[in-house]
Image 1 (cartoon, one colour):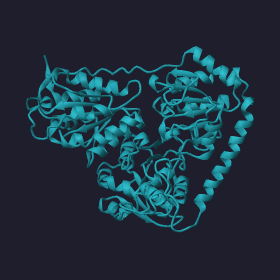
Image 2: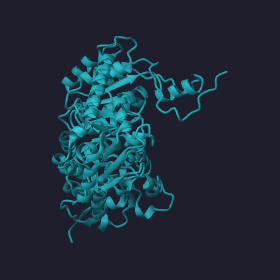
Image 3: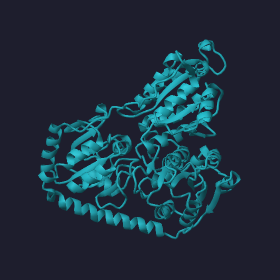
Length: 559
């Protein structure tokens, strides 16, 4: 039997699976794999300065390409543990992250040896599967299965722990045939008929479209459905790129992190078609403030357990979002869409008013710069093919529904994990996945501090991401809560950041400092034209803070 070493086998499986790029940070636990990557080429390696950042890069790469996103936890123990945050992020984003995690050699297991920790148990609650390879003959088979599992059904991360000695051990030449992934199909004809009956009775129907359309490559199917049935579309949180900005049927993002027009649609609708959308906390707060108590609900998702989990549904469909949209588009000839013409026209009037208000925000000449003005300038400056990544935080919260996206995928956010420090690393992964598209990362000053070392990664690997850092000198969300609910008593809320534009220049990138109206747009345009990594450090009004959740704390009693 012909054998090769384990590192070579892992490389061959990845190459056979069509993996074009892997992310990581060099460590001693899998040098044979690194040697194979260097010797053969064909798979790009992006080396980060922090394993967590490498994980976010691979996560974003998966979201841009459809997956998998592969990250190498090349150092057993601390290096792999440092990936836990990135795996948890991918877990709550249903992103097919495949972690090849180095582990201590098999003969050292259970001896409390150097850097030993129970890695398998650590990751079990935050991924689809965390498993240790114990037999070299099964290494390639188990890696293929990890990729298959990450990509199957509702996608998600898988962590494969490979002992150090197995990368050097002789193992069989692997199977490198294509890995077949089963895909969910269309809804049953009986379900389509039931939806038709509900639409015949509806006067205020709306589509709520979620991430299922992005994973399914279904943006065109969604647009065709909306146009065929003349239905308004609301995006679930974090997915404001499911339809092109400005489309007359697109309301933008709804829910507590969205706009009032979109939220009114879902609150006042008599029929909600929730397609590829879970109607979960980030989009609804589980509240009838955002999902009308009297609305009939049709919900379709690839994951059966997600259907009807948070709100009772009238028609429950386990199916692919794009295939569901295609099936429902076929109902156009059976329906009288004039039944909801008044509903649609009122929405379009409301949307026009909202867009006018946002144009006025962008023209506000006030100093210090209001974040909404900064975002308005950025919205105008963004090319139509731009990819935007966001962080979590007060400034980024205001960006969630204020930017413009014209291509899908075009927006990558932390989603349900609410992670600070995600956005810039994610932008580097997105740029690696889409080298011909402009990528812009919108961050707060605190969040950018988590990952500013990755400017060197951008420079070293020629990833021309433009970071726009909105600096309000604070952990803004928490400061807003301390101000409103704790009598303005602040502890830990205010922060001092370095001049990130100067840090960028020291790292070999471009740097721009802005502090007034009319400056962000030209800086973005210049940076994008240069096709070099850049950081735009924008000072914004520190008083422009808002509290999202007023149910978390008790308001102070008045004397």
